[in-house]
Length: 382
Image (tube, rainbow, N blue to C red):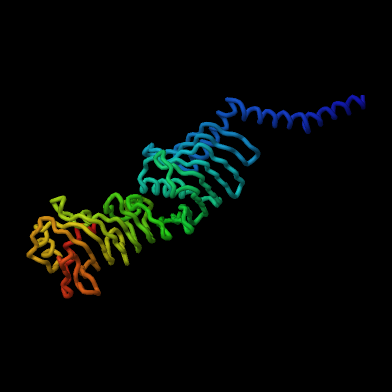
């Protein structure tokens, strides 16, 4: 009787200590590799990621590598409100623990989404996560609108999350010093989001930055920005009040976009805009200071008297060509709510000249004139 009881106890110990865990582990592994297991595993990941990002998540397949390590296949993320596709990735390696998560994205595809939509999505859905959790993201190849973008290859991103704030830092580019973008958001009321961009000598298409500007600016399809800017907005919607400051250089500016005229042939040519200071508070520009320099182009003769009168400039009245060719443009400007001034060349044989052709000045400044800011108020304040 005693031996029989001992055998029963040994069998129970074997079942509890070895057989049952083996069945559970084996069953779990089998479950993860079956259709039913995939359905359950994807459901768990989709639910967790959807809640964390407040977005719609789709996952094609999940590979269990080892505890804490997974490979996600065919991942799609869409904005929950607009249903717009934000990004998709063909392969994402996940390595996570209770305190941190590392994401290695082999190929990230970004559809035709404007920058403000992207920033709002990060701001409202990803950066709103306030748990103390370190999240690091590494991106291999980036595809924009299904086409490779060399400037974004080998980009890296890091997300730092805490109870007080969240911060996204992205570096990209093939130069020795890459472009750097940082987006920070506070979590406690009143919430404030701050975007900081430093190009470090790289040129970025100006059109891609319009979502970060307090006023949509069109300076031509080829216009590029090189410099730094900071944009602060609250309470989290990008259409709210914006504080903005920038300095840098915008190249390939189409002058017809700055000096607009009913006649499309009013002025033709390209220039470089050097921004010395640009400050905006609560959606109202406070100060603009810079220099515009350009090379060869043409300006319509019939427009010159009107342009000179509005901008308080001197002009040459005996020009005969309908489209007057010019070879140099130099204009230094300073604007604030009280008025603005325009100045021409500061040295050489043509001091004071803003626009000139091979025989001399076409337009010149009036050093003592200050133009009322109402002339530009409509363009600079929304």
